[in-house]
Every structure is written in structure tokens, then in C-alpha cells.
Image 1 (spheres, rainbow, N blue to C red):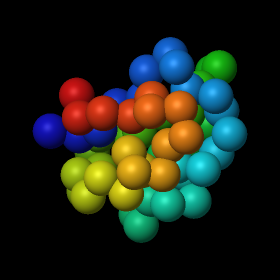
Image 2 (image 1 turned 90 degrees about the vertical axis):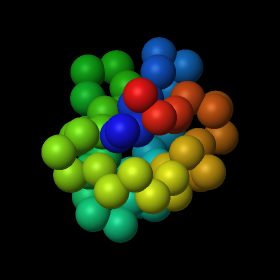
Image 3 (image 1 turned 180 degrees about the horizontal axis):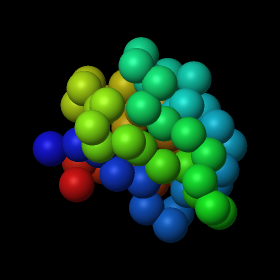
Amino acid sequence: MAYVISDACLSCGTCEGECPVGAISQGDGKYEINADLCLECGSCEAACPAGAISQG
């Protein structure tokens, strides 16, 4: 199951740089993960300083 970003997102962009396939992009008010591209590797979850990323 792909990862998702909650409303706790700080919009810092740390996760975007950690994604090996470019599945994360700036959305309206927070970053978003494209579920079709997500490899479920967890690198974004580990990098998030706000703990806003989890498996959906």
C-alpha cells in the first residue's frame, strides 16, 4: 500500500528529495505522494521531521 502524507505536513520538502522515483510533489498546502509511482520503500517516512508520512 502506498504511503500518504497527513495534514501534519510542514511543507518543508525533505521527503521530496528522498523519494527515489519522484513520486512526491508539492500539493495545495502540503506535499502529496502519487500512489501509482510509490515503491513503498519508506525512505520518505524515515526522512519526515513531522512524522506526517505513513502507509495508507
